[in-house]
Image 1 (tube, rainbow, N blue to C red):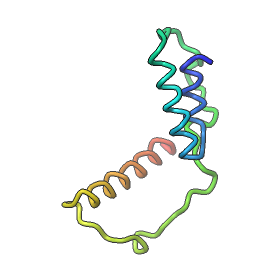
Image 2: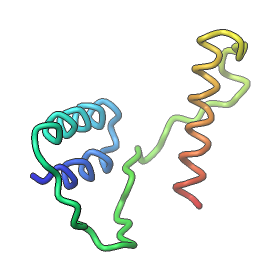
Image 3: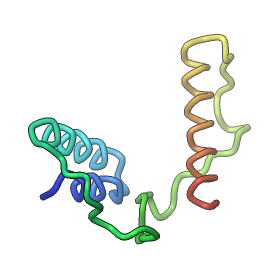
Image 4: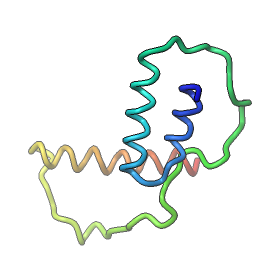
Length: 93
């Protein structure tokens, strides 16, 4: 399979572990070949990209442990939260 189609298939996966495995396999494949620059999809195609679970687990802010942004764990939690916010803003927007 062409690396771009493999990447698209990985992007559409909803299970995080499967998505990581597919992404790593695609990257390993792509590192061994030359990738052509011609488009494989037409602009405006939006058929399930990116894939995400049907019902993501939602947790109230009051139900999670508070962490200081001045610790490595706290910074990681903050960045993780921002990534979720931006992901949803891009997907919805």
